[in-house]
Every structure is written in C-alpha cells, then in structure tokens.
Image (cartoon, rainbow, N blue to C red; front, top):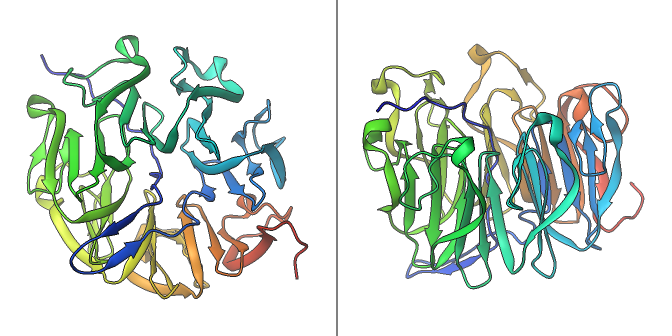
Length: 387
C-alpha cells in the first residue's frame, strides 16, 4: 500500500571527531567540530570551560518557549560540562564531557515520550550514557556510543528492518542497529547515513543514495546498504548530501539545491532528470563541511573558509533571491577551525579561539539587529572580553 509522504525536517548533521588513516594520508576532522551550532531558530556555543551558551528564539533549553517578542539577543547559560551540541528545528542534543546525552524540544527525544508542540520539553532531559556523537532530524535521532554502536529512535525509516513507522508506531527509546560506526547524519525521517570505521558509507530509507539510483516508497531500503568507500565525514540536508573522502575531496549529490558545481537544481524536483544521483567533485583538501537547505560552507586544511548558495555567505553581498545565488565556492575567511550554517546565518571559530557570526539580523547574539554581510567577532571561547 502506498504510504503517505511526511514532511521532511531540515537539519544540520552532526559530525563526530575522528581520525581516519588511509594509504593516501591522515585526515583529522577539526577538534572544534560540535562546539558551535547555527540552528533553525537559535544558536549555540560550547565555551572552553564546557559551558553551553545559547541565543535566538524557540527552545533554547532554559525552560522558556521564546518567540520574537522574548527572543534572547545576548548569549545565556544553559548547562555545564558540555563537549558537543547538535540541533534542528524541533529539538537540541547536547553531549557532556563524560558521555551523557541530553535532549530538549519536541518530537522523539528518546526518553520514552512523544512530545507535541504544546508539550515540548523546555529543559534538558537525560537520554543515555557513553555517547560520543549524535544527530537528529526531529523525527529520527541517532547516537554513536563509545564502543562504536549506532543507536536510533523516532519515526520514519530507522534502518532496523521495519517499514516506515508513523508517529504512532515510533520507536520511543534507543535501539542498536549497527556496529563499527564513527559518524552519522539524519537529514530527514526518510533518509539516514552512517560511516563505519573502514570508511564505508551506509544509507537507508528513500531518495538518492549516491549510487546512481533514486529509491522511492515502493523500493525503500529498510536496513543499512553500503554504497561507497573511503568516506570520513558526511553532512546532509533534506535535499542534498555531501561527503569528505580520506583523500580530502568534497563530493555532493542530491535532488535539489546548490551543490557547488555551478548548477542550480530545483528543490521541488518532480523530474528526476534534474537530480544529481552520483557524487560530483566540489573541492579538494577539505577537512570540514556544514550544509543547510540554502547554502553550504567548507574548510580546507590550511584554514580557508569557502561558501556557496543563497542568503548571506559572508563576502559582503546579500544573496536572498535564488536567482542571485553563488553557484560555485568563494573564499570567505582565513584561519577558520570550524563552521556551522543554518542557511539564514553562520557561526565560525577561528584558530585563535574567537567566535564569529554573520547573516540575518536577529541571529547575532550581540543585541544588534542589523544584517551582517561580513563575519563579526562576537565572543572568545575562553570567556575573555572582546578586543
């Protein structure tokens, strides 16, 4: 029986801190990965002392639901002892330095409850121990434990061999589905990807897997399928996917959006002839990438930040219309350790421990409501005052 398509939640996939050694070279994912998060409505920064700070609207984790009337414009303290943070438009995940996973927001947090819009969890709730990485689309959440087991919960295609789960059939607590996993991305309830320690990319659900096939409801993949090798990192949204190989190459594919190869692909693609079903090479010498529905940003091994797509990229122009989008990577800033983009704004940490932000006015965390076309220094990770 044909299943009803669900709305696909936007997400910025969380990448685990790993080192992968191959016959080509050793590639190290930046140690700052997971220290900043430009979310759908809010932004998060993990300070050097482990304090998690947040600003914006929505569910920051401080016990208050915030709209435009009571937004936080200056960072506030949420919790201590944090090493990694991940967020989407529905919920936020935080991992402590001792491996405890905490979550707040709506949907399936993993504590056995389904939370509606009116029943959101406003403060962090404990989920599980021994976690080193986590990613959520709002519908599906995945966590990697210290023994490299992949745990998953929520609704959609979970990869556990069971067909599409509605919210009434959701897995409400974590279930283990894979071994030897070092990274995971959950771009939507329909598609999940994981990397194993031998560099294999595994995919399940429906959509473009990167192997030249577009899988629909009638041929959905219910358990993880290996589709590529030599992969060390992934980042994905509901409309396209990106990976980094052990040779430092950035590749992209998907059904729409700005891949960075000079071509605009309709997000609402109905003709699969427009989709990029196999990976296309975008950049070389890449160590980190962050994606959103409207743009992407990547960092080379020498610290150069590159960006492409629509919205405010940080190069002095506002590309808010699709027609004006930047279709190939342009250089934004030097000496960057890690970057996170939500599409509307971006956060970056430079090698000297400074936090920078740019984009739409309500996103900055400095109490000023003016669109920023260039990166602006807003805080230092060690808590010292601005220059």
